Image (tube, helix red, strand yellow):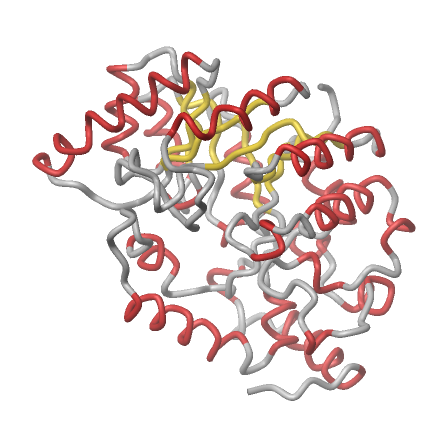
Length: 365
């Protein structure tokens, strides 16, 4: 595909919405929605425990119920990636209990021509590599790997791995990303609009506690993670935005220049995803990559999955704040490392947040 940016987006369980997403490709030249991804819903009888199940949806009672939507994705020239991306650790007994369901899922998918699986668990990677060598393994960001050595070891052990999505915290670490690009034959995909708290201390554990069965729920833990995240995030909203690892459309070329052309838009667990309004976010993102002028009047909040149309940012557009947000070139220079220097020897983002707060005052919590 040369220099074209290839995007993956969540697959809706709605044929009309799938068609509308595919139509976006006809509006842009520099980018293409190449992949759609999703997994079983919590109410499905086939859930095997390796999914990060985000929603309940009555349309998906079993793996076969996903097939009409996958068929439409293929018909429109896109590929489908099935998610088995939970970081949960199973003991041998639990794995054996779930293995039958896992094998059913894989066999149904392969009959439909789906050989791309997004995986987190090293145990599952090993199982797929030995039992289903025809499957292309794509590693999930939920692995939360921070070291090139980790990826080098993983790629050596499992050559079936074709793609990795680094930890969200590494989006601004250009030195790391450049090295990762040179690791084996791995494609590097980056999440662009994940709105999670930068430096979140809960992210891995939150994923571990995602309900994995229709009859399981953890309201106490869900409340714990949500309240902890919000307490920090809204304590100083502009600071959280400036420190965020979001990649804005006008910053994509910086990643292209180090050889990264694969990007991921998230949002499958939002209400706007199910009602189709999220499609407009996909469209605006790709239009922004095409030409910044297309999105100058678009609300800045839509580029964060956490802040979509948030009332605190009501009326603040891309053109209002684009030149006040952190410049991606600052991070490309690599004179500071966010994981080591943020808020101590480096106050770049903090200073920008103070200027934004002065121009666009927000009542912080």
